[in-house]
Length: 239
Ligand SMILES: CC(C)(COP(=O)(O)OP(=O)(O)OC[C@H]1O[C@@H](n2cnc3c(N)ncnc32)[C@H](O)[C@@H]1OP(=O)(O)O)[C@@H](O)C(=O)NCCC(=O)NCCS
Image (cartoon, rainbow, N blue to C red):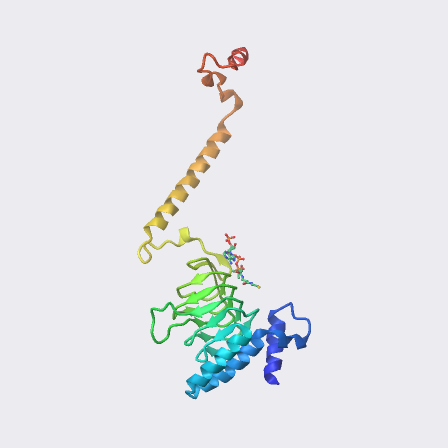
């Protein structure tokens, strides 16, 4: 009963679509997390086959595959659920929200700890892939469809493929200002940033010069180099 109450609280907090408490029984994560508790208990008792059996049963029912070895904190909410994969050595903190199509997996290159550690209050958008044994810091947000292959600092927003931090503590991160030529040499990015700054300063100069030009400065004859030009009469008259 306490499990049902906990799920109602979590889903009501995180999904505005829920209208009545009874709808909690319609959420796949309700069943997936229940089965995971059983599977994880069997896994810890070294009943590995039974543990995997429960996990696969749950996968068939909900479309959410959580390896029974994964450690999951309090208040996890998996919205929609279909296509979520959570690997064996994955650790998930408290109050994490995961949308459909998320993979918390390995790159296939590691042994031992192969899957990510997700901090508290992290949100992972639909379709995002977080691959490797690194940490995603507390309160961070992984954008829908991002591919994250590196540690994510706390309070950050990561977007894109490969994932890049675009915001930290609510402030936008500008890669030009962040260039560190000693520790992160990236000659192409540096070249692009230099060119961008040059173009910006040239644009400024052109705008300033345009502002100084007056109508009298314009010489209509300077364009009349063609003796057969049909507008030559008008230019001569103006002159
Ligand atoms: C990333 C997200 C959490 C917003 O986080 P945020 O910290 O508020 O970031 P912002 O909205 O300020 O966006 C920051 C930048 O990232 C871009 N961005 C946001 N989400 C993006 C995404 N999924 N893919 C690519 N770029 C994205 C924004 O356009 C913005 O770019 P700009 O700086 O050039 O304007 C949100 O956009 C997101 O992806 N949520 C996932 C929700 C989801 O999966 N829902 C499924 C419901 S069924």
